Image (cartoon, rainbow, N blue to C red; front, side, top):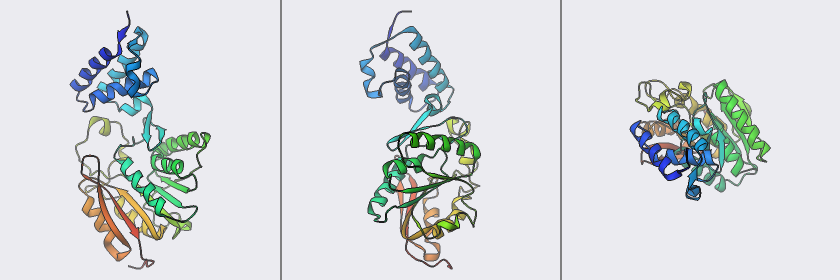
Length: 295
């Protein structure tokens, strides 16, 4: 087979993916091509023609995506901040929306004058937030908690890869973020807590990439999506030092509910709901401003 223009292959892939119901068909077609050819997506124009073997490999990747296999499972990586994480079956794929939470967390750390700052990532999954924070703030002491052993294996793998690349080691814990006596040695010492816990209400309609591939333990949290967040808040309150900050990602139906959970007892102030890339409520932030824990 003669060489074929890349733009033709990408156009055909876009049409195939769109017909399969992939909303980001053009983006995914280009990302797959760039990944296979080892170039930045913006530099695909510099690879005008592809050999038949490359074209065949590309079509196989596109066929996988047309079956609604997550794009990140096909490429094997997912970005978060300035790093790429390895992902695959058994671990939740980090979402672009969580980049907004990461940006807030980094800005909060900039305002925190304690050195080294202590950071805690709840329900770390692949290690995305913990490792992105450790990369951006090598001075930080970063703890990360994950309940699912399969996800923890991915977090350990990513942590090792980041350490090999020179990033500060993180401290991983295989545990339940709702356990009342979890990590009591950190009580009153944590400067920043970030959390992307399971928060999807049971029965919610989800895309095939999510419902068929993301681990359900990382998705669902009871009928209202609060079965993890609600009991987790008490732990957040005792871990944070006075003045420490927390950011919790949540279902778009639960912004007010999560804000209300943080406002109960008078232990938090500056409670603000932030939107995601589509303008929907996506994460709530707050500051610990009261030393009392008897409320």
